[in-house]
Image (cartoon, rainbow, N blue to C red; front, top):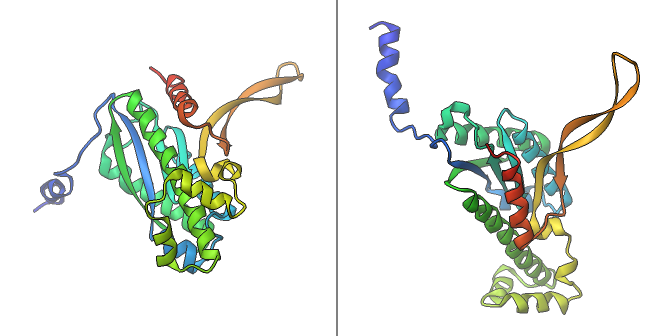
Amino acid sequence: MKFDELDEKMRVFETAHDLCVLPGVFMVARIDGRGFTRLTKEVHAFESPFDVRFRDLMVATTGHLMESGFRVVYGYTQSDEISLLFHPDEDTFGRKTRKLNSVLAGEASAKFSLLLGDLGTFDCRICELPNAGLVRDYFRWRSEDAVRNALNAHCYWSLRREGKNVAEATAMLTRLSVAEKNELLFQRGVNFNDVPNWQKRGTGLYRETYAKEARDPRTGETVLAERRRLKVDYELPMKDAYDAFILSLLEGVAR
């Protein structure tokens, strides 16, 4: 059998279940760390519940993904997860989900591992969102999750520092309301409102326009030229203001 015939025969087994995101459907990639609790708490012992060093690793990994050949409108990271909102016209790999998932997971794993100096792996899934309202809701969901996780983490580690073991700290937090958790922290000298916003809301990355001095080659004069750069935002808005922010990003790329 000639190679071309063999290639055609076998290729179908590799591509038979290829799925593609339909044109006009928004794509968001959700990229999550695998086994990061052990990696960050035991192997490398980052500070709990939050460590600026780990935050910066995740921000740098997110920035790398946004510059890795895809048209990404917005990157968001909290804890060990990253969400990427693609431009509506993104068509790399023909929008095949298996290709997007494997390449993005590989890029994230490689970049994070190089930065950490140790093996860190990620998985990836593509969320298919048919309208801008669901894109807004997706990022509102991840933002609300960040707030919930931050409150729980600060409570849990406050109890652990008091000598409670894993089971005791977990049991004490079970069935506590949000108000009760805030009070638990307040009694220990922590006002959750004063916790840094990047811990409560995550970090956003998006492109901004700025003015940069340049030299006009025709006249030799110094002029201001518009440039684009990736902005890292540690002070994201919350709730309805965050909804409006996400929708404004979509308006900026509307067809």
